[in-house]
Length: 465
Image 1 (cartoon, rainbow, N blue to C red):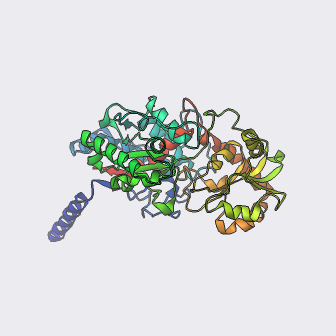
Image 2: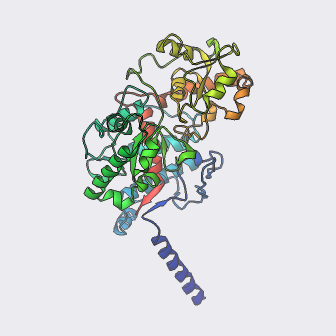
Image 3: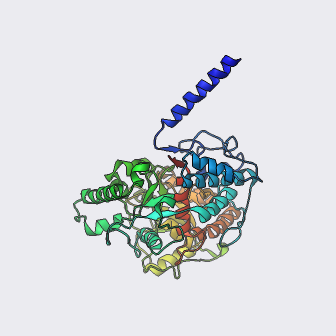
Protein backbone atom coordinates (compact mmCIF):
# COMPACT_ATOMS: atom_id res chain seq x y z
CA UNK A 1 0.00 0.00 0.00
CA UNK A 2 2.88 2.36 0.81
CA UNK A 3 4.25 1.77 -2.70
CA UNK A 4 0.90 2.70 -4.20
CA UNK A 5 0.88 6.00 -2.28
CA UNK A 6 4.39 6.77 -3.50
CA UNK A 7 3.35 6.13 -7.09
CA UNK A 8 0.28 8.35 -6.61
CA UNK A 9 2.42 11.18 -5.25
CA UNK A 10 4.88 10.74 -8.12
CA UNK A 11 2.08 10.95 -10.66
CA UNK A 12 0.72 14.04 -8.93
CA UNK A 13 4.15 15.69 -9.05
CA UNK A 14 4.48 14.91 -12.77
CA UNK A 15 1.03 16.41 -13.37
CA UNK A 16 2.02 19.60 -11.52
CA UNK A 17 5.17 19.90 -13.61
CA UNK A 18 3.20 19.43 -16.83
CA UNK A 19 0.70 22.11 -15.82
CA UNK A 20 3.53 24.47 -14.88
CA UNK A 21 4.98 24.07 -18.36
CA UNK A 22 1.88 25.49 -20.05
CA UNK A 23 1.92 28.88 -21.78
CA UNK A 24 1.96 32.17 -19.95
CA UNK A 25 -1.82 32.36 -20.09
CA UNK A 26 -4.35 29.53 -19.97
CA UNK A 27 -7.85 29.36 -21.39
CA UNK A 28 -10.23 27.98 -18.80
CA UNK A 29 -11.71 24.58 -19.56
CA UNK A 30 -14.84 25.83 -17.85
CA UNK A 31 -15.70 28.47 -20.40
CA UNK A 32 -17.69 31.31 -18.87
CA UNK A 33 -18.96 32.73 -22.13
CA UNK A 34 -22.63 32.67 -21.27
CA UNK A 35 -23.70 31.49 -24.72
CA UNK A 36 -22.14 28.16 -23.79
CA UNK A 37 -24.32 27.76 -20.71
CA UNK A 38 -27.49 25.73 -20.95
CA UNK A 39 -30.00 27.15 -18.43
CA UNK A 40 -31.70 23.74 -18.18
CA UNK A 41 -28.66 21.59 -17.30
CA UNK A 42 -26.03 24.20 -16.34
CA UNK A 43 -23.52 22.41 -18.57
CA UNK A 44 -21.33 23.72 -21.33
CA UNK A 45 -23.01 23.58 -24.71
CA UNK A 46 -21.39 23.89 -28.11
CA UNK A 47 -23.66 26.29 -30.04
CA UNK A 48 -21.41 25.78 -33.05
CA UNK A 49 -18.29 27.11 -31.31
CA UNK A 50 -15.34 25.07 -30.00
CA UNK A 51 -16.59 23.28 -26.89
CA UNK A 52 -14.54 23.71 -23.72
CA UNK A 53 -15.74 20.21 -22.80
CA UNK A 54 -16.45 20.70 -19.12
CA UNK A 55 -19.38 21.14 -16.81
CA UNK A 56 -19.94 24.05 -14.50
CA UNK A 57 -21.52 21.69 -11.99
CA UNK A 58 -18.38 19.55 -11.84
CA UNK A 59 -16.05 22.52 -11.43
CA UNK A 60 -14.05 22.62 -8.22
CA UNK A 61 -14.57 26.39 -8.17
CA UNK A 62 -18.24 25.92 -7.26
CA UNK A 63 -18.66 26.47 -3.53
CA UNK A 64 -21.69 26.19 -1.22
CA UNK A 65 -24.20 28.97 -1.72
CA UNK A 66 -23.70 30.42 1.76
CA UNK A 67 -19.89 30.51 1.68
CA UNK A 68 -17.45 33.03 0.22
CA UNK A 69 -15.55 31.54 -2.75
CA UNK A 70 -12.23 32.73 -1.30
CA UNK A 71 -12.01 33.60 2.42
CA UNK A 72 -9.26 35.80 3.84
CA UNK A 73 -7.04 32.87 4.89
CA UNK A 74 -7.31 31.36 1.39
CA UNK A 75 -6.58 34.75 -0.15
CA UNK A 76 -3.41 35.14 1.95
CA UNK A 77 -2.30 31.64 0.98
CA UNK A 78 -2.85 32.43 -2.70
CA UNK A 79 -0.91 35.68 -2.41
CA UNK A 80 1.96 33.83 -0.75
CA UNK A 81 1.94 31.42 -3.69
CA UNK A 82 2.46 34.38 -5.98
CA UNK A 83 -0.98 34.48 -7.60
CA UNK A 84 -1.61 38.08 -8.77
CA UNK A 85 -4.37 39.86 -6.88
CA UNK A 86 -6.31 40.54 -10.09
CA UNK A 87 -6.41 36.78 -10.72
CA UNK A 88 -7.70 36.19 -7.18
CA UNK A 89 -10.34 38.83 -7.91
CA UNK A 90 -11.37 37.05 -11.10
CA UNK A 91 -11.56 33.69 -9.31
CA UNK A 92 -14.06 35.21 -6.91
CA UNK A 93 -16.09 36.56 -9.82
CA UNK A 94 -16.12 33.18 -11.58
CA UNK A 95 -17.25 31.38 -8.45
CA UNK A 96 -19.99 33.94 -7.86
CA UNK A 97 -21.30 33.51 -11.42
CA UNK A 98 -21.28 29.72 -11.07
CA UNK A 99 -23.26 29.96 -7.83
CA UNK A 100 -25.80 32.16 -9.58
CA UNK A 101 -26.14 29.56 -12.34
CA UNK A 102 -26.57 26.72 -9.86
CA UNK A 103 -28.97 28.52 -7.56
CA UNK A 104 -30.67 30.92 -9.97
CA UNK A 105 -29.65 33.98 -8.00
CA UNK A 106 -31.24 37.27 -9.08
CA UNK A 107 -29.73 40.19 -7.19
CA UNK A 108 -30.49 43.83 -7.84
CA UNK A 109 -28.37 45.63 -10.40
CA UNK A 110 -27.35 49.27 -10.60
CA UNK A 111 -30.17 50.93 -12.47
CA UNK A 112 -33.06 48.60 -11.73
CA UNK A 113 -34.47 45.14 -11.08
CA UNK A 114 -33.71 42.01 -13.07
CA UNK A 115 -36.75 40.19 -14.41
CA UNK A 116 -36.05 36.71 -15.75
CA UNK A 117 -36.65 37.03 -19.46
CA UNK A 118 -36.48 34.94 -22.59
CA UNK A 119 -34.28 37.60 -24.19
CA UNK A 120 -31.36 36.10 -22.23
CA UNK A 121 -29.77 32.70 -22.65
CA UNK A 122 -29.25 32.50 -18.90
CA UNK A 123 -30.66 35.46 -17.00
CA UNK A 124 -29.18 34.66 -13.53
CA UNK A 125 -25.72 34.13 -15.05
CA UNK A 126 -25.85 37.38 -17.00
CA UNK A 127 -27.08 39.52 -14.13
CA UNK A 128 -24.53 38.13 -11.69
CA UNK A 129 -21.74 38.50 -14.24
CA UNK A 130 -22.80 42.08 -14.88
CA UNK A 131 -22.88 42.72 -11.14
CA UNK A 132 -19.36 41.32 -10.76
CA UNK A 133 -18.16 43.48 -13.65
CA UNK A 134 -19.68 46.59 -12.10
CA UNK A 135 -18.00 45.85 -8.79
CA UNK A 136 -14.58 44.68 -9.96
CA UNK A 137 -13.64 45.41 -13.58
CA UNK A 138 -10.67 47.75 -14.09
CA UNK A 139 -9.05 48.84 -17.35
CA UNK A 140 -5.74 50.59 -17.84
CA UNK A 141 -5.76 52.93 -20.85
CA UNK A 142 -2.39 53.54 -22.45
CA UNK A 143 -1.87 57.33 -22.67
CA UNK A 144 0.90 57.07 -25.26
CA UNK A 145 0.37 58.63 -28.69
CA UNK A 146 -1.43 61.73 -29.88
CA UNK A 147 -4.71 62.42 -31.74
CA UNK A 148 -5.95 62.06 -34.40
CA UNK A 149 -4.81 58.43 -34.68
CA UNK A 150 -5.02 57.66 -30.95
CA UNK A 151 -7.42 58.60 -28.12
CA UNK A 152 -10.31 59.80 -30.32
CA UNK A 153 -12.66 58.22 -32.85
CA UNK A 154 -15.55 58.99 -35.22
CA UNK A 155 -18.89 59.76 -33.56
CA UNK A 156 -21.24 60.84 -36.38
CA UNK A 157 -21.18 58.17 -39.06
CA UNK A 158 -21.43 54.42 -39.57
CA UNK A 159 -18.42 53.99 -37.26
CA UNK A 160 -20.15 55.73 -34.35
CA UNK A 161 -19.74 52.90 -31.84
CA UNK A 162 -15.95 53.02 -32.24
CA UNK A 163 -15.71 56.72 -31.47
CA UNK A 164 -18.28 56.75 -28.70
CA UNK A 165 -16.61 53.89 -26.83
CA UNK A 166 -13.15 55.49 -27.07
CA UNK A 167 -14.59 58.84 -25.98
CA UNK A 168 -16.37 57.41 -22.95
CA UNK A 169 -13.21 55.74 -21.70
CA UNK A 170 -11.11 58.82 -22.38
CA UNK A 171 -13.59 61.00 -20.47
CA UNK A 172 -12.90 58.98 -17.33
CA UNK A 173 -15.10 55.91 -16.95
CA UNK A 174 -15.52 54.37 -13.51
CA UNK A 175 -13.87 51.26 -14.97
CA UNK A 176 -10.56 53.01 -15.58
CA UNK A 177 -7.64 52.69 -13.19
CA UNK A 178 -4.51 54.82 -13.09
CA UNK A 179 -2.59 51.95 -11.51
CA UNK A 180 -1.78 49.38 -14.21
CA UNK A 181 -1.10 46.71 -11.57
CA UNK A 182 -4.79 46.86 -10.62
CA UNK A 183 -6.00 46.38 -14.21
CA UNK A 184 -7.69 43.27 -15.52
CA UNK A 185 -7.26 44.52 -19.10
CA UNK A 186 -5.21 47.07 -21.04
CA UNK A 187 -6.76 49.13 -23.84
CA UNK A 188 -4.91 49.98 -27.04
CA UNK A 189 -6.73 53.24 -27.91
CA UNK A 190 -5.92 53.62 -31.61
CA UNK A 191 -8.65 54.25 -34.19
CA UNK A 192 -8.41 52.20 -37.38
CA UNK A 193 -11.12 54.40 -38.91
CA UNK A 194 -9.06 57.56 -38.40
CA UNK A 195 -5.97 55.79 -39.70
CA UNK A 196 -7.89 55.23 -42.93
CA UNK A 197 -8.76 58.94 -42.95
CA UNK A 198 -5.25 60.27 -42.30
CA UNK A 199 -2.59 57.78 -43.38
CA UNK A 200 -4.27 55.58 -46.00
CA UNK A 201 -3.78 56.57 -49.66
CA UNK A 202 -7.26 56.63 -51.26
CA UNK A 203 -8.02 53.83 -53.75
CA UNK A 204 -4.61 52.24 -53.21
CA UNK A 205 -6.02 49.34 -51.15
CA UNK A 206 -2.62 49.27 -49.47
CA UNK A 207 -3.17 48.68 -45.76
CA UNK A 208 0.52 48.52 -44.87
CA UNK A 209 0.56 52.09 -43.43
CA UNK A 210 -2.20 51.05 -41.00
CA UNK A 211 -0.38 47.90 -40.05
CA UNK A 212 2.90 49.76 -39.56
CA UNK A 213 1.28 52.23 -37.21
CA UNK A 214 -0.31 49.46 -35.12
CA UNK A 215 2.93 47.48 -35.03
CA UNK A 216 4.85 50.58 -33.97
CA UNK A 217 2.31 51.43 -31.26
CA UNK A 218 2.52 47.95 -29.76
CA UNK A 219 6.32 48.11 -30.00
CA UNK A 220 6.28 51.34 -27.97
CA UNK A 221 3.96 50.11 -25.19
CA UNK A 222 5.62 46.69 -25.00
CA UNK A 223 9.02 48.30 -24.47
CA UNK A 224 7.80 50.96 -22.08
CA UNK A 225 5.57 48.73 -19.92
CA UNK A 226 5.88 45.06 -18.88
CA UNK A 227 2.24 44.08 -19.41
CA UNK A 228 2.15 43.16 -23.10
CA UNK A 229 5.13 40.86 -22.84
CA UNK A 230 3.94 39.39 -19.55
CA UNK A 231 0.73 38.04 -21.12
CA UNK A 232 1.79 37.88 -24.77
CA UNK A 233 -1.01 40.39 -25.40
CA UNK A 234 -3.79 38.19 -24.02
CA UNK A 235 -5.01 40.77 -21.49
CA UNK A 236 -5.07 43.60 -24.06
CA UNK A 237 -7.86 44.69 -26.34
CA UNK A 238 -8.38 46.85 -29.40
CA UNK A 239 -11.70 48.16 -30.72
CA UNK A 240 -12.74 49.21 -34.22
CA UNK A 241 -15.82 49.38 -36.40
CA UNK A 242 -13.99 49.74 -39.72
CA UNK A 243 -14.30 46.88 -42.22
CA UNK A 244 -10.51 46.73 -42.53
CA UNK A 245 -9.82 46.37 -38.81
CA UNK A 246 -9.44 42.55 -38.94
CA UNK A 247 -6.76 42.89 -41.62
CA UNK A 248 -5.10 45.79 -39.79
CA UNK A 249 -4.91 43.66 -36.63
CA UNK A 250 -2.63 41.24 -38.46
CA UNK A 251 0.12 43.83 -37.94
CA UNK A 252 1.14 41.92 -34.84
CA UNK A 253 0.60 38.13 -34.62
CA UNK A 254 -0.02 38.32 -30.87
CA UNK A 255 -2.66 41.02 -31.37
CA UNK A 256 -4.41 38.88 -33.98
CA UNK A 257 -4.15 35.54 -32.18
CA UNK A 258 -4.12 36.38 -28.46
CA UNK A 259 -5.62 39.81 -27.81
CA UNK A 260 -9.31 40.56 -27.56
CA UNK A 261 -10.37 42.24 -30.81
CA UNK A 262 -13.65 44.16 -30.54
CA UNK A 263 -14.87 44.39 -34.13
CA UNK A 264 -17.96 45.32 -36.11
CA UNK A 265 -16.73 43.08 -38.93
CA UNK A 266 -17.29 39.92 -36.89
CA UNK A 267 -16.97 37.34 -39.65
CA UNK A 268 -16.35 33.86 -38.25
CA UNK A 269 -15.08 32.67 -41.63
CA UNK A 270 -12.34 35.35 -41.70
CA UNK A 271 -10.52 34.80 -38.43
CA UNK A 272 -13.03 36.22 -35.93
CA UNK A 273 -12.88 33.93 -32.90
CA UNK A 274 -16.05 34.22 -30.76
CA UNK A 275 -14.39 32.68 -27.71
CA UNK A 276 -11.80 35.48 -27.67
CA UNK A 277 -13.07 38.32 -29.86
CA UNK A 278 -16.11 40.56 -29.30
CA UNK A 279 -18.74 41.76 -31.76
CA UNK A 280 -19.14 45.54 -31.75
CA UNK A 281 -22.67 46.60 -32.78
CA UNK A 282 -22.72 48.71 -35.92
CA UNK A 283 -24.89 51.81 -36.07
CA UNK A 284 -25.06 54.94 -38.17
CA UNK A 285 -25.65 57.86 -35.82
CA UNK A 286 -25.40 60.62 -38.40
CA UNK A 287 -26.36 63.51 -36.11
CA UNK A 288 -24.53 62.11 -33.11
CA UNK A 289 -27.80 62.16 -31.16
CA UNK A 290 -30.50 59.58 -30.37
CA UNK A 291 -33.34 62.10 -30.71
CA UNK A 292 -36.32 60.65 -32.58
CA UNK A 293 -34.73 57.25 -33.24
CA UNK A 294 -36.31 55.19 -30.48
CA UNK A 295 -39.92 54.00 -30.54
CA UNK A 296 -42.56 52.98 -33.03
CA UNK A 297 -46.16 51.96 -33.52
CA UNK A 298 -47.74 49.18 -31.44
CA UNK A 299 -47.58 45.72 -33.00
CA UNK A 300 -51.26 45.71 -34.04
CA UNK A 301 -50.94 49.09 -35.84
CA UNK A 302 -47.97 48.28 -38.08
CA UNK A 303 -49.19 48.39 -41.67
CA UNK A 304 -46.03 47.36 -43.57
CA UNK A 305 -45.30 43.64 -43.54
CA UNK A 306 -41.57 43.71 -44.40
CA UNK A 307 -39.24 46.60 -45.26
CA UNK A 308 -35.72 47.21 -46.53
CA UNK A 309 -34.14 50.23 -48.22
CA UNK A 310 -30.47 50.33 -49.12
CA UNK A 311 -27.81 49.85 -51.76
CA UNK A 312 -27.59 46.70 -53.86
CA UNK A 313 -24.06 45.61 -53.00
CA UNK A 314 -22.18 42.79 -51.34
CA UNK A 315 -22.88 39.07 -51.69
CA UNK A 316 -26.31 38.98 -50.00
CA UNK A 317 -28.35 41.93 -51.26
CA UNK A 318 -28.30 41.03 -54.98
CA UNK A 319 -30.09 37.80 -54.07
CA UNK A 320 -32.63 39.72 -52.00
CA UNK A 321 -33.28 42.20 -54.82
CA UNK A 322 -33.52 39.43 -57.40
CA UNK A 323 -36.45 37.85 -55.58
CA UNK A 324 -38.10 40.72 -53.74
CA UNK A 325 -37.32 44.06 -55.36
CA UNK A 326 -40.07 46.66 -55.14
CA UNK A 327 -42.95 45.78 -57.44
CA UNK A 328 -42.50 42.03 -57.04
CA UNK A 329 -44.86 41.73 -54.07
CA UNK A 330 -46.95 44.41 -52.38
CA UNK A 331 -46.17 43.02 -48.91
CA UNK A 332 -42.42 43.12 -49.42
CA UNK A 333 -41.12 46.72 -49.53
CA UNK A 334 -37.57 46.15 -50.80
CA UNK A 335 -36.04 49.18 -52.50
CA UNK A 336 -32.67 50.79 -53.20
CA UNK A 337 -34.12 54.25 -52.61
CA UNK A 338 -34.36 55.67 -49.11
CA UNK A 339 -37.95 56.98 -49.11
CA UNK A 340 -37.92 60.82 -49.15
CA UNK A 341 -34.87 61.15 -46.94
CA UNK A 342 -33.66 59.84 -43.63
CA UNK A 343 -36.63 60.80 -41.44
CA UNK A 344 -39.03 58.96 -43.76
CA UNK A 345 -36.71 55.96 -43.72
CA UNK A 346 -37.07 55.69 -39.94
CA UNK A 347 -40.82 56.31 -40.26
CA UNK A 348 -41.07 53.27 -42.54
CA UNK A 349 -39.20 51.15 -40.00
CA UNK A 350 -41.39 52.36 -37.15
CA UNK A 351 -44.54 51.10 -38.92
CA UNK A 352 -43.11 47.85 -40.27
CA UNK A 353 -43.66 44.45 -38.67
CA UNK A 354 -40.40 42.98 -39.95
CA UNK A 355 -37.26 44.92 -40.86
CA UNK A 356 -34.96 43.09 -43.26
CA UNK A 357 -31.29 43.31 -42.26
CA UNK A 358 -29.15 41.84 -45.06
CA UNK A 359 -25.37 42.10 -44.92
CA UNK A 360 -23.70 44.69 -47.15
CA UNK A 361 -20.09 44.62 -48.26
CA UNK A 362 -19.25 42.92 -44.98
CA UNK A 363 -21.28 40.80 -42.56
CA UNK A 364 -22.42 43.56 -40.16
CA UNK A 365 -25.34 45.89 -40.83
CA UNK A 366 -26.48 49.00 -38.92
CA UNK A 367 -30.06 48.00 -39.75
CA UNK A 368 -30.10 45.49 -36.91
CA UNK A 369 -29.69 48.24 -34.33
CA UNK A 370 -32.02 50.54 -36.31
CA UNK A 371 -34.70 47.84 -36.28
CA UNK A 372 -34.36 47.42 -32.53
CA UNK A 373 -34.63 51.17 -32.04
CA UNK A 374 -37.78 51.17 -34.20
CA UNK A 375 -39.25 48.23 -32.25
CA UNK A 376 -39.40 46.29 -35.50
CA UNK A 377 -38.56 42.57 -35.48
CA UNK A 378 -35.14 42.22 -37.18
CA UNK A 379 -34.87 39.67 -39.99
CA UNK A 380 -31.14 38.91 -40.13
CA UNK A 381 -29.92 37.70 -43.51
CA UNK A 382 -26.23 37.02 -43.23
CA UNK A 383 -23.55 34.38 -43.39
CA UNK A 384 -20.92 33.71 -40.71
CA UNK A 385 -21.91 36.81 -38.72
CA UNK A 386 -21.50 36.53 -34.94
CA UNK A 387 -24.32 38.65 -33.53
CA UNK A 388 -23.62 41.32 -30.87
CA UNK A 389 -23.83 40.17 -27.26
CA UNK A 390 -24.71 36.66 -28.47
CA UNK A 391 -22.93 35.17 -25.46
CA UNK A 392 -25.75 36.67 -23.38
CA UNK A 393 -28.75 37.44 -25.59
CA UNK A 394 -31.12 34.82 -26.96
CA UNK A 395 -31.46 36.30 -30.44
CA UNK A 396 -33.96 33.66 -31.58
CA UNK A 397 -36.47 35.05 -29.08
CA UNK A 398 -36.69 38.51 -30.69
CA UNK A 399 -35.39 38.15 -34.26
CA UNK A 400 -35.71 35.96 -37.32
CA UNK A 401 -32.54 34.55 -38.87
CA UNK A 402 -32.78 33.50 -42.51
CA UNK A 403 -29.99 31.68 -44.38
CA UNK A 404 -29.12 32.87 -47.88
CA UNK A 405 -30.54 29.72 -49.43
CA UNK A 406 -33.98 30.57 -48.03
CA UNK A 407 -34.23 34.11 -49.43
CA UNK A 408 -36.63 32.93 -52.21
CA UNK A 409 -38.94 31.67 -49.42
CA UNK A 410 -38.57 34.80 -47.27
CA UNK A 411 -42.23 35.88 -47.36
CA UNK A 412 -43.49 32.37 -46.66
CA UNK A 413 -41.12 32.07 -43.68
CA UNK A 414 -42.37 35.33 -42.18
CA UNK A 415 -46.02 34.54 -42.90
CA UNK A 416 -45.65 31.19 -41.14
CA UNK A 417 -44.95 32.97 -37.85
CA UNK A 418 -48.23 33.00 -35.86
CA UNK A 419 -49.59 36.41 -34.92
CA UNK A 420 -49.25 35.77 -31.19
CA UNK A 421 -45.61 34.76 -31.65
CA UNK A 422 -44.90 37.91 -33.69
CA UNK A 423 -46.48 40.05 -30.96
CA UNK A 424 -44.33 38.27 -28.38
CA UNK A 425 -41.17 38.82 -30.43
CA UNK A 426 -41.98 42.49 -30.94
CA UNK A 427 -42.46 42.90 -27.19
CA UNK A 428 -39.06 41.30 -26.61
CA UNK A 429 -37.47 43.71 -29.09
CA UNK A 430 -38.68 46.50 -26.83
CA UNK A 431 -37.22 44.67 -23.82
CA UNK A 432 -33.80 44.21 -25.40
CA UNK A 433 -33.72 47.79 -26.72
CA UNK A 434 -32.05 49.17 -23.56
CA UNK A 435 -28.94 47.13 -24.33
CA UNK A 436 -28.42 48.93 -27.65
CA UNK A 437 -29.12 52.50 -26.57
CA UNK A 438 -26.23 54.98 -26.53
CA UNK A 439 -26.46 57.32 -23.55
CA UNK A 440 -24.25 60.24 -22.61
CA UNK A 441 -23.23 59.74 -19.91
CA UNK A 442 -23.68 55.96 -20.12
CA UNK A 443 -26.38 54.25 -18.07
CA UNK A 444 -26.32 50.74 -16.59
CA UNK A 445 -26.82 47.95 -19.13
CA UNK A 446 -26.81 50.30 -22.14
CA UNK A 447 -24.66 49.67 -25.23
CA UNK A 448 -21.45 50.99 -23.67
CA UNK A 449 -21.80 48.73 -20.66
CA UNK A 450 -22.87 45.71 -22.73
CA UNK A 451 -19.73 46.08 -24.87
CA UNK A 452 -17.69 46.24 -21.66
CA UNK A 453 -19.50 43.18 -20.35
CA UNK A 454 -18.65 41.19 -23.48
CA UNK A 455 -15.00 42.19 -23.03
CA UNK A 456 -15.17 41.32 -19.32
CA UNK A 457 -16.42 37.81 -20.15
CA UNK A 458 -13.44 37.18 -22.43
CA UNK A 459 -11.10 38.22 -19.64
CA UNK A 460 -12.84 35.81 -17.28
CA UNK A 461 -11.92 33.02 -19.67
CA UNK A 462 -8.17 33.34 -19.28
CA UNK A 463 -5.73 33.28 -16.39
CA UNK A 464 -2.52 35.27 -16.64
CA UNK A 465 0.42 33.59 -14.95
